[in-house]
Image 1 (spheres, rainbow, N blue to C red):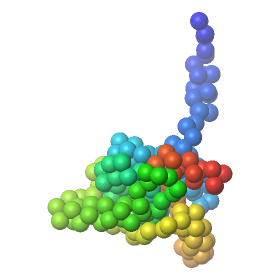
Image 2 (image 1 turned 180 degrees about the horizontal axis):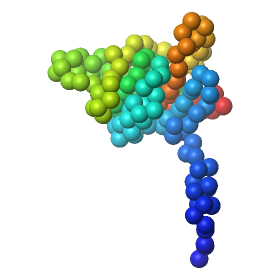
Image 3 (image 1 turned 45 degrees about the horizontal axis):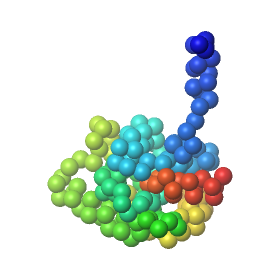
Image 4 (image 1 turned 90 degrees about the vertical axis):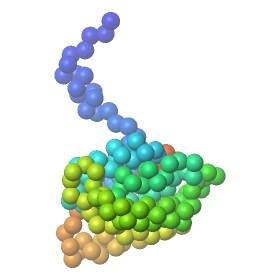
Length: 178
């Protein structure tokens, strides 16, 4: 039997990390990847964003596989983000950025028609995010970084760039940005 001191266990757990799960790739501006790829993972991510980053301008780069429950995944981002960039990566089953945008637009219309509050966790919610489609996620990220640098001179807002929606997408982003 192994005998561990409680302090050693806590110290070991504090050093543990899960690559691709709320993993910080860059501190300034804050750039995080999260491998949420199903409704449950996205719900956890949405709650985490509301709890820890509600004071940040949040830009999400989203790409998912076409066989995923994309509408249910996206609903968790409503009211929590400021900009949503739909993109795609090189993979046979990837959903197109355009189809994900269309799903978002339908979801937004349904939410508006039903007059539902988008905040499901009781925290304040953000207005409808600006959306766009980017064929190349890396180029879009570089453009967002340039925009951030220009605006940082004028405004002192905290910024978070988040990549999510697919394990494969997050893996590609991690490999390219690390």
